[in-house]
Length: 153
Image 1 (cartoon, rainbow, N blue to C red):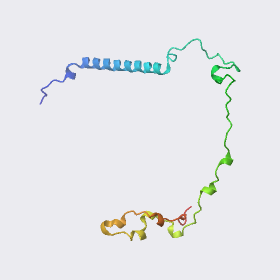
Image 2: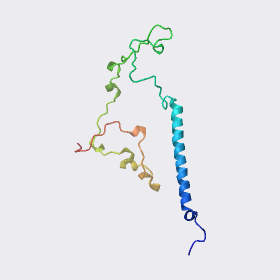
Image 3: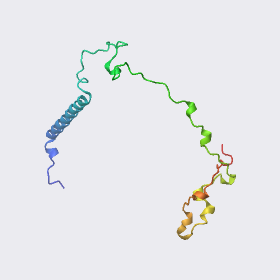
């Protein structure tokens, strides 16, 4: 069964291609134009139209005092201090900051406090609440360093 409505692209193929090419070209030219306009606006006209008076061979004369390098009172150039004003002696010793924890017994090598099987028996069996993660309270937490598992290298 043939379609009853005409398709414009089949009737005027060259005209739509020409129109599409025109719009694509116009948009590309506008994009490039606005790119250079933004570049000129942000950096000033010297980027697109360089001045000929400045060349790479012109050098600064050492010892020449510029108005930007002098202080407001005109006493001379500002002296910059690049020396470090701190040293290793100013650091706080780390052994004072780190608390010492005794090692835990070896039966805690695989211990996961939030999923402890013995602790889970204390919770209600209704709706499987005992199977949920219950992390220990502050007074139940271990204050020891848990050792590595047996044979761990």
